[in-house]
Image 1: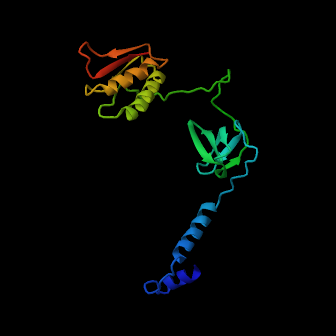
Image 2: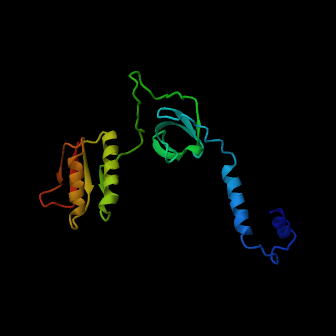
Image 3: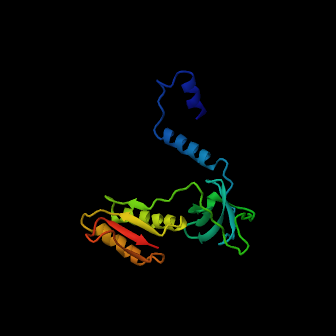
Length: 193
């Protein structure tokens, strides 16, 4: 590799040809050195759910929720994000102090005062698979924001989206009632919590 670098710096780079396979070997060696540099993970023998670990790729500390021994991966809760991480990207950490715990041991969540929660969501043109997760998050945000009623705009179309959203809302534990916004079954469903 030093010979190649010296050849390029001396101006022989245009005329110099690299033998077949040499570039691939140099590239793989470089990538191996680059990926392994600075990583000290992998020393997590006996890792189990509830252990505190540092996720090296995120530079964050989290709690192990589940270990997948065959796949050599673990599910780690990092703040409000749950990630599946290779065991080589983890290192054991000291237990951290949770500052947002109330007296009864439950985690306290506070919504930002300036955050405005919309009272409607428009999913017109989306597929059922795209729309349902968005509707679910919208309902969660509405509940956290203290809204009592929201509108889901799904449009008229073939009715697939309206039916799928209706089935989803029927089994949602926080939904008291839902139905069309008006008698003509417009493309809007009203949801009450």
